[in-house]
Length: 419
View (tube, rainbow, N blue to C red):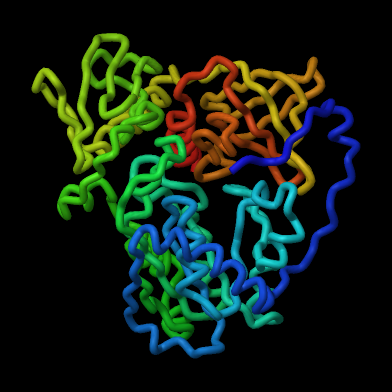
């Protein structure tokens, strides 16, 4: 999937009128059916099945908050089929509206800026529930998982449950990550996909519990490890490209400690610093060719990388400085490429400068609990996004390098320290 874009000067982008806020729309039966029909072929191709638990407790016309784990693009297709014909509004990343705002709103989508506190989004969700009597589909992780485990949840989620006062349903997928992991360059694998839809909390139970108790329940729901499930259930991914791009996740060698020298290609992951090579097995584990394994489980390696980033931060040595190509989002008409700049990330947070000295944006470490970073974003390249409610800045490294994962880890650890 690609995104509409154009080149425009930074000054001209600042002069563009910001779009007026629009209230959410209830998707008509036509658009609900259209989305279901468009989603069905992919689900058939994965031999999709769904299991329900406690769903008899949800009234046919009763609005609910559907929380879903975020693994790949098939997630929306799953929801569109298993929730049909129930009307629901989808909380969707704002860049998903670019070039197709009318269609997205008719499908019931509500735009959201990832990892940015936005009271307008909360008001839109309340309006959808109370005025439209629609359900809400929300991916509280906000971004796809990098390593097959859950990404952080916002502490405000428990407060949202108390505000909406509607039942909470969990949609938990299996196989979606293994079919299309983000690092693997949109190459689909032949894997069965399934989902379990569970009635979790009634409005009465929500009111009885504290915000902390609700958040603890939600963290339990979003606790998973897809690579571990793959191994335990002997799910085989036989495609010869299964390690393509794995260096995006495993960017640091645990043997020589070099960064940016890892290469994932075919079924192998190798380090250009020390020559160490691993094979990615059909069940998702890593085996060192010399038989000397430090990590065989990908999430363990990724967790170690997080620890290494934390140590850099605490030692005062973490400092990202990279030249970037800058795209801006200020409306739903286009992504505007405004020129080149420099992105800095350290203990002081982010600083983006560029456009011949006209752009200078700073963002503190406490601004967000995580970071919108992505691999092969809309087929353009790896990306880091920062910004606020007035503009989003999409930064694409000009010299390559696997920095998306490390920068997200650093942003999360800096937030914890500053909080």
